Image (tube, rainbow, N blue to C red):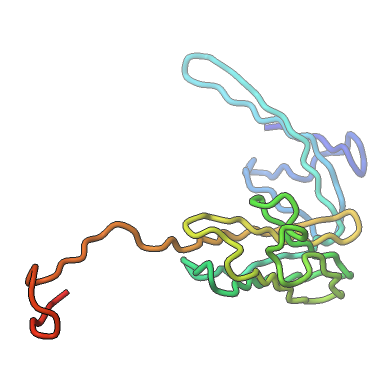
Length: 186
């Protein structure tokens, strides 16, 4: 593979290349940089190909976003609460969304605000869902996005709503009898 520096010093030797041509790249935590990397491959038949990409390292800290996984199955009649955490060196805007709803804020699903301004440091944000607002048997995806300036990061969690039981057989024995006189077993 080859590497050329695009930023901060165009054409400078690529600091990503190591003496053993290792495929692991370590980003420096204190400097922004951009590189153009090309990987070359060939096979035993003499066929060759290559692919290139630009790799950018930013010196701006991303807000870290994490979500607590809910139980495997949730009841649609319960008040479902999804808990997230945003860690950011500056204040951030935390926004809840779902690919299942065009606009979570106006879908009559959320009991809590879907957009929250956090402070710098660690903030816990929760999305509380209206009981009976999710369809039993359906899978929902909820995303928490934290934006600080022009930098965003996100985390997504899957919520599976339990379906009611269906099918089955009820048997009674004996098949007939006299009310209040015959003992029936279900």
